Amino acid sequence: MRAGPRGRLIWITLGWLGAVMLLGVGVWLFPVEGQGPRGGVLALEAASGVNASPMDCAALEQRAIDRDWPLVRREAPAAGWSRQPLAVAVWGLPTLSAAVRQGDLLTCGTLRDARQRDPRFTAGVGAVLHPAAGSMDAVEVRVAPSYSMLWPAVVHIGDPVDALRADRLRWMLRTGVVAALLVLLASTLLAFGSTRPGSLMVFMAATTGFLVWSLEISALAGYPQRWLAPQGLHFLLVVALPLPIVAGFAHSLLIQANVERHHALAERFSLGFLLASLLTLPLLAVLPRTAIANSVAAIEILLLIVAMVLLVCAVTIWRNRRDAITLALAVVPFALVTIGSLAGSSTVQLWKIELVLLCGAWLAIVSHLVAARRQSRVNRDLELMKHLASTDDLTGLPNRRAVLAALDVEFARARSRGDEAGLPIAVLDLDHFKRINDSLGHPIGDRCLVHFARSVQPLIRRGDMIGRTGGEEFVLLLPGASLEEAARILAKIRQTLAHSADIGGHPIALHFSAGLTDAASHPNPETALQVADRLLYRAKDEGRERIVCDQLLPDSLTSGPQAMPTQRA
Image (spheres, rainbow, N blue to C red):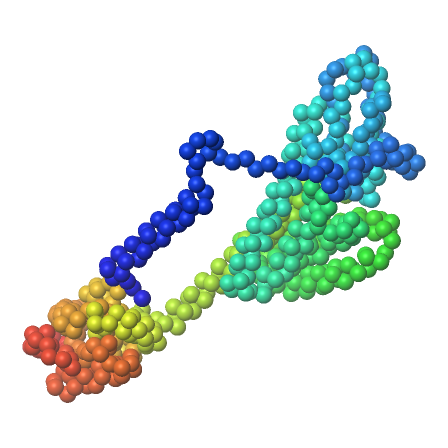
């Protein structure tokens, strides 16, 4: 319902009064004192040691010695340590624990719980040492062994600034990936809630799994304390989730990029691999940890095979260039990192966790873009289908279905406006149109219909609608106009068409008869259309080339001009 100027003024006044009342309530609830500070201070008294138990570094070091943990040792310079601080940082899998000793100084930490390590290091375990000047005691770092040689721990001993910068960079990359995944999930949920395409379900499941895996592998699940899942499930989540995650993304890419049209075998392979990887989850839950740890290399080889299959698909559908490039860009970084990891590249091993997270996030982003692009194509096709279903193929005007739908909408609006404005409706029919088809042929008749449509559209008002309802019959809707104004518009159309035009090499002047009524004055749109149609037949019976209205209008608006010496329709 549209509000008039008076209604808009009332709403503006009510809104202003509501705002003033809210301000008054705020001043009453939170008064501003005349003297003293204008702001408040919220004091928090935190209980010390809540839910936190300090690590026994001596016991951890002894356990490391008994179990022969890997030892990284840095000897003191020939002149002894200077007074400059020395940083020790250890990065690795979340199962990492480390004990650092320099002389009598012993410190330790673990990634399982952020409360049990130096808060200056967020992505790993670290400490800033202050060796005594001239001390010759070496720095010894004992690190819990990784369960895979492909995911080694990284130990940094050196300048504190470099160590803290590297730690901050790792932390930013890890949190950035998690934030990007959350945004992707939110965007996908919005798209899924509005259109509910089944193809997005696999992508949403894969993205959710990758989010959980990212939180585990980046140690964010232990910050500020363990919150995502029990510690006993960490190993299973880290090792078991990569297969279904990559399989899900691969299947989603193949579906969204329409690769299955060219490679049914690849689409079936991705689906089979996805189902098989899901079936391996219960198996990994019951196998011994040592057996699972030994299978990490095999898992990465399987992931590399999946990436290569996708690349082969991208190469073989190169004729569909856009989808092929997208598919290749999605998996090339992942394949390179996996190859570097299997080849033992020092750069990849140094930043293994961050690189894998970035490649996974890139794969998720590309999959999301491909899904969004496909959904955009689907929406465009739907809009095209709607347009074709409501448009006349020959003239480009709305067809009968669109006209009837618009009449229903405008009739409801006219009734809601009351007597402020009417809804004139006119049914037009070209006079003697059969003569043109019989004498000049149907192609010329079709050109006449197109000429009529193009000539009428500039002459009607913005918001009016003319549509072709069949043959040489048209319906004109003029929302908000009076019958006199509608008659003047019809007269202008009639005068314009009465001048002969060159249509297919023939000088032809088009004439029409019309029945005009106010649809808002009838009980329903169907009755209004029937009345206008009867008025049209009355105009035909009275000699054609005229407008007949069910209300009294000036003769100058309804009577037709004299016959012109040209071919008439």
